[in-house]
Amino acid sequence: MKNIFYKLSLACLFAAALTSCSSDDKGVILDPNNTQNLWSFNESASSLTVTNEVLTDTIEVGVTSASNVDREIPINIDATSTATSNLYSFQAGSLIIPAGKFVGKIILEGNFDNLPDGATYTLVLTLDESQVSILDDYNFHVVTITKNCVTENIGGSHPYRQYNMVGGTEGPVDTIKTGTMVWSQTAAGTGIFKIADLSWGLFSSVRGINAATVSGGNNFIQWTCAGLRANTQDQFGNSYTYDVVSVNGPVFTFNWTNTHGDKGTVEVTRNNGRDWPTSLLTQ
Image (cartoon, rainbow, N blue to C red):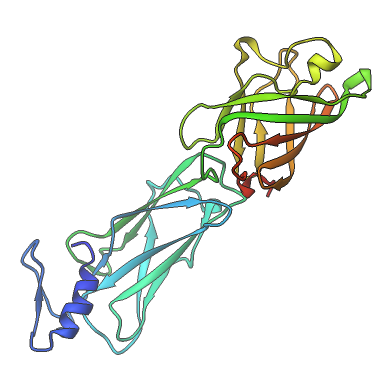
């Protein structure tokens, strides 16, 4: 019964010689003029991936008969939903199908600020069968809601330049550190990358230690909807904060600090000469 309401509104309206349209699935006779109101979601599922630019999903509910007045249909949220009310919003309670129309719409909006990066939730919407008659059991619609601002793979061997370095209790470092940092993507679409040195060369410049790293070198950074995040601590238990301050074509610049008081400014040049995604900027 997918898109049955479009079939009705097109086929039945343009085929004026016809008095009815039939559903091939179950033999239901659908006549837009017989006042028999059969309701249904037009699709059983959809996906809403919330990003810096995309917040909404349009969900359609249809009815099989025409009317010269607006019609209201109650929409319920099923208890099996895992999405809590702080993660989304829409005009709660009901949906209006305008007079002369067969389809009405719900605009579902994801709450960008409250959704955590990478998590997946479901929102199950239902039509109340105690109040309306349902067409072909299409009385539910499941929305999969996620938040993910990763639009491309930014892995590779990227040259960098670090300056304005401060070595915690050692104080400012009057030098510029250059090198190449390999970003190894851990899994497609996650925005998580393994790098060798959380300090981008500061440890070697200040303390003669090769890198700020955990055992095995499993340091991870992540491109999120809130910018660039350091997901691991170093060998001394220090946590790291990365704040992207500018994205200028193939060069992006960020300031970093850790809980020991180390800090610096790093410019990273993309290895293939392509522009960095502007969504690396902190939102």
